[in-house]
Amino acid sequence: MTTAVVMTYDSLVNNIQIYLERTDATTIQYIPTFIMLAEQCIASEIKFLGNLTVAESTMTANNAVIPKPARWHKTTSMNVTLSGSKQPVLLRTYEYLRSYAPDASATDVPLYYADYDYNNWLVAPTPAQNYAFEVIYYERVQPLDTTNQTNWFTIYAPQALLYGSLLQAMPYLKNDDRVPMWQAQYNNIINTLKAENTQRIGDRQATVLDT
Image (cartoon, rainbow, N blue to C red):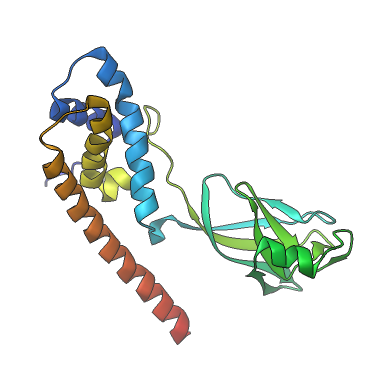
């Protein structure tokens, strides 16, 4: 029985070095940066249900600011638990929340939320109690490094990660006639991933509409 080969951080670093045909220490030390930039580019181009995460926590009474989870990327929905039932907390703009609840000391069950900054949400009205709440959000992939050898990219998008890393190396190397080939390979893989991702999201939305 053949065992499937899964890309790892170490094998990716080795492949990048082989493709670049560079052995100088300066280039090699920048390879982790090329990988990090490629991960960010791929993540900005696609969303995937494999990283749709459900988190539960508790609001703090008299505090309208709620910390976001580590590696938060984008919120899908939020709800608060009241007497065992989940009540939606609806997304609105920051300005709407400030207009709706100008007095932060006035407390009640939160009805709305907004991004306060990259690390926190703002809810309105300010929670009157320590309400339990649930949030569904897209989580950024745990970045690759020597201690984290695999992630979503190495398992499901290894080619995109390889060619994306090679493309990120080009501004550093300044000249490589293989760029068009790498760009074409990267674009083809990303387009395939986008199509698959769109289908998964469409299936999820259809399921919601049918229930």
